[in-house]
Image 1 (tube, rainbow, N blue to C red):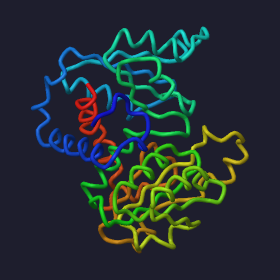
Image 2 (cartoon, rainbow, N blue to C red):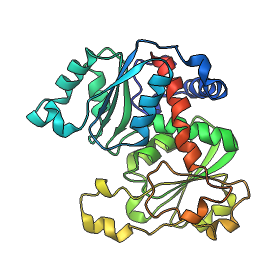
Image 3 (cartoon, rainbow, N blue to C red):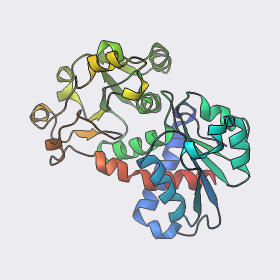
Image 4 (spheres, rainbow, N blue to C red):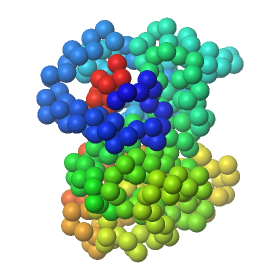
Length: 300
């Protein structure tokens, strides 16, 4: 990779992606070989929104590389509560660490932060914008289970506000992938995302019901309805629980269908799917460590 910061999946070429995924595969095979690769390096974790998997896996990743993490902690106990700007916070944190992982509720926050610091900034989610490191671990999971060329991927759920969807859809245009998007009308892909996909020459199809394409899919990527992004609670209630995947539904799917989810799930995947061979969402979460180790190894 030849990037100072990782802000968007759109900046990643096929070569960039394969470099990270290949390194992640090496780490997966022999994690001990990378144990002291970045001894003495410090990674700043600046999370302005809640996180379990992303935050913990970055913390784990830098420590498994021999480095350590410094955590800004809750926003409520930081100088942000006193009115400090994001630019000033980033300038201060830059003096404490060799890299910054930033999650923020405002789309474009990571790009803004990268303009004020000289250490690498990694976007860990910016509102309804992008989540490129989630996309890298998603691609790693897809590659391990189905390959990344000549496959059909269905992406279902909240396509309007889901930043994991926006990142994954963009990254998949680097590969020979047929993309099917399944959502209620009110949660379709935003127009600018659809435009970018078409400009990239992507093979894109939109549907209201997963049953229409389920038997053609190699991968089904399910997302939750992003309640926290809705400006109107009543609009959320209209679509909450509208889509649900259970074991009975999957009986009509391919035997080797891979079901994924960026987590957390609410009610969109029934617990009875967990025991099927289709379920790969916990493996997907575990893949966050080798993939983020690989990314940090490239950037640091």
